[in-house]
Image (cartoon, rainbow, N blue to C red; front, side, top):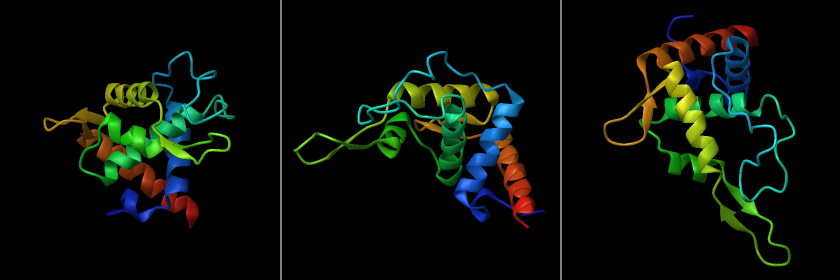
Length: 144
């Protein structure tokens, strides 16, 4: 389908399809510690999907950068952070792990999906734009 972009596809469907594409491709560099690490200081446990959560995070980050001009690690930390359960005291927002988001961005950079922006942060590359639009078109065809 010509003219289909990531904006035309439901977010969850696109993220699942792109994550499975990245996993099948096998080129995404996954750190060795992903099965034991928490994704935020606010979480009590690591993700239950110990195999595929890194691919889903990478797909989600790629979509997030696609929808915006440029994004840095700090913005991603704030986006993927959440409320910390402090017992009796009120909840407070804590940022996500910067190391994980940095590794995701570096892995996507090696694949050529994102590139470093001269203004700071990362932006989607031309190859990444083409790949994400292709996956979005395939996702839209699967829905119909």
